[in-house]
Image (cartoon, rainbow, N blue to C red; front, top):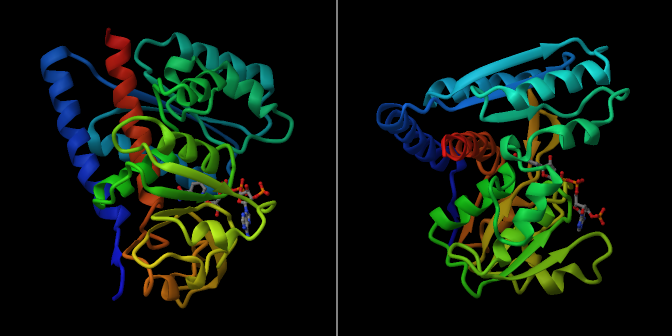
Length: 293
Ligand code: NAP
């Protein structure tokens, strides 16, 4: 039987509708206006389009958006001054510095200067630490989106064998940590695979939930998937040009073959992708509640 497709687009739309309502109530009942500051350095086309999408997302759900566009040759000191100013600005609940930054700027120095209580991307070491001890304030956006997709697809997580392929700091490690917490929507038995893993298939074949964040097309093929599994494909790979002239995208999973084995699967595009910005908006609303206290 062909797998049910988990539509990230639909789940993201549902969560944005919930957030929009939450913002209406926050404004009406408590006078809280959530605000997100984005900082874009230079004119990298991918970064420009991400920041534009974040601004549109804010507008859609009623978050005030403060967009700072800076020249690519700005000094590290001047960028730091802006971050410090945003840290102090009461109208700003969340700060997002779009990566990558130009090579002459120390990315970590800038990210670590963001007030952890405004770090809605969840990358600050203080927030990584909070995540590990299960007291997370702002779960990082892509992993948070993955968890929502698993839960809203009706896949049980408690006691599930969950295998993550990939151990990056932005996807693999945090999602593994989130899913092993002794909490609702988690509590899984977690295994992490990577390029050093011996016989990865032995692990993936045991997975009730398989999360693939390798950045390699067809890193997971049908023979590596347990029948009936839920498969979350995080990968975004450009594999040529579509008829439209745009880049053709593929995930890390051999989708056509794996959908005949799995019970549920996310597509690429339209799976994890639409969830990431939605989780950023959710973290910003969460930050506005925190700051109002
Ligand atoms: P990354 O930093 O390159 O990490 C990839 C990880 O996968 C590494 O740990 C690597 O192992 C492992 N790996 C690579 N090929 C493998 C293979 N054949 N078998 C087993 N493990 C393998 O990538 P990332 O930042 O986590 O991103 C992963 C993918 O997700 C990329 O395609 C990226 O574009 C996509 N992504 C999508 C979103 C979204 O919003 N949709 C967000 C973030 C990332 P080693 O550690 O041993 O090298």
